[in-house]
Image (cartoon, rainbow over all chains, first blue to last red; front, side, top):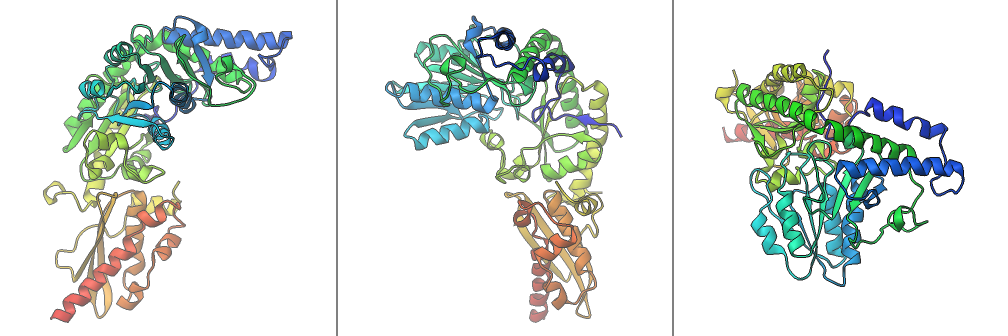
Length: 391
Length: 124
């Protein structure tokens, strides 16, 4: 049976070039970059070379503006808590959106308990942030605006440049969670006026457990982990050198491939979306039709539930995700799908296809061949399906 | 995540459908929380002569519906009323803990269908 993995938003394979680059740093070059001897030097040089590569991926001015973390969640924690605590004297107001990654949502809720005020700016039906509402929310107590570059679930790419301009004019720190976007669309922190930017290695075909935070020189933040003062005091703890080397290599590969791979994936994505909407009645696209990540197709099917769709597709070797409550640890429907105005039962019937490097056009053809049958079978089981549809 | 038995009942659910002239009908759950199921029963000589179901929901919801119809088929109404959610889960080789409550409603739907039958009978 054909195996079609279209769940790259959940996890990505390690790029073979990345794997090769990491190998010497497990058993041969195992020094600690903080050591003064030559073993330490080897590790330090590898780390600084990786830092340059990550900096280049997002067009940072200086490599020193990048610090390594344990992943996207930690980067978001450091950026948001670090900026909020450090600038508390200036104010206690934070602006974010209703469709951020769950880590940003939960950090914001945590800060509310600590006495911060948080405005969650709404989005429209296609998941686009309401710029007017965002501007209205800024007041003299606002210390941070945190908006994701693109949403990993519905794919919508936000007007980052416009928000960056607004933040800079109002002298508010601008944090961008770029975990889902990096490597898929070009990012330029200088031109887009971004002060803090979160990255995750695995979302670049790098190893899991590594991430980075871009911190524009002069941005005031404080550490959230206390220790030996690594990473300019902002992220203590001995650095994961193999992981960092892997993230560096992954960033280099991503930078080289982003344009060509973006075009290739956009064509596959559009073929998938068009095919599904054409072949299956009562199917709908979630998110923006054009301003969306090249690898993301979020589709919704009336009368059926997403987890059973996942299992049904898995039987044909196709691996995808869903925003259904039945697939979440909390048994709540995706906050992103509810924020774009879907009813609970609509959110349940959504499937997220996130394509990647190894996906070919034949894979899309295969999905288009098997998905209609899976949907038809589940609709025949469902009490919600109108009788005239079941034959 | 699921046992082989659950996957078997999910892929090849038994007794799917509706009974147009059912003696009793029971519906539990709602589409907002993600699970909705309806059981239809035919009763002959105080026994369940036929059972069919329709379910909207996750793999566990579909498998438990299917298993419940299998456990109840041919049983007396008193025996069928004693079938519990735990019996259904046990016969499926267990369910993930998170699914035990939200998606294991089929026994309730069966009981509702039997109560519906009994209510209708009293009215006659």
